[in-house]
Image (cartoon, rainbow, N blue to C red; front, side, top):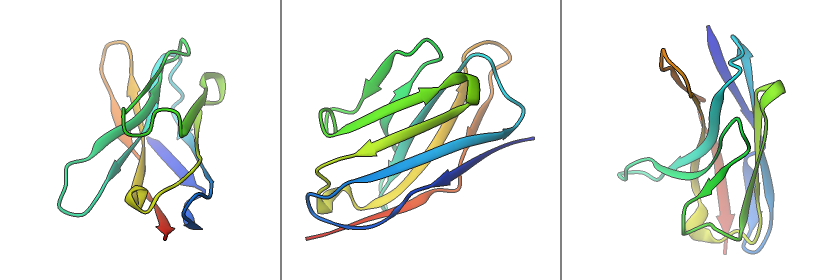
Length: 118
């Protein structure tokens, strides 16, 4: 069984920073893309940032330059540094793992709340 354990959410003022962390417990995959998604109420879940096992990163255009993802494949963990936060960034952030080889496998964390006050 695979579980994604998230931490680091909270309340911060506009312009502030937070760091989200996610660690995999259970089965560890040698080749997996890990990342962070977010979902506001009534909206679809959207990709924020991902990092492959090879270290290739991908960011949503809306956060590029403000957020930084760092993955530790050997530890099956991924962090997301959120800088210069804005009230529009307020929502629940979810950690995601997607195995890069067959058989495919995807897992989600339970989500952490990020709230940015103006």
